Image (cartoon, rainbow, N blue to C red; front, side):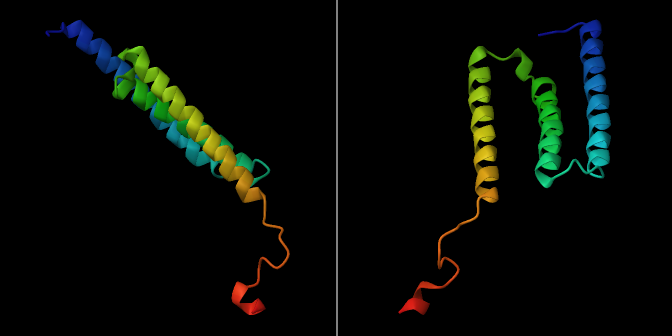
Length: 111
């Protein structure tokens, strides 16, 4: 499978553009860490959105997933939905404390 020099130059140019975007987004991530968006949850949500964008670029371009068969997109969509649901469940569980009477005491203390 021989590619012409023009094809290779096109790929190199794409890789350099995506690499530049990743560097800029890394700087954005660092700068966003100094901004308070009102709550820790909001800060994490914005940080995860930037990280998701960066990881999607890496997966699609450098891992060549943009040329894969449709099955890989179904698997990736399932994984994305699963991770999103797990983040939501963990967030809800973190915000919901246990409100049972006597929960703080050790069971052996009652006998």
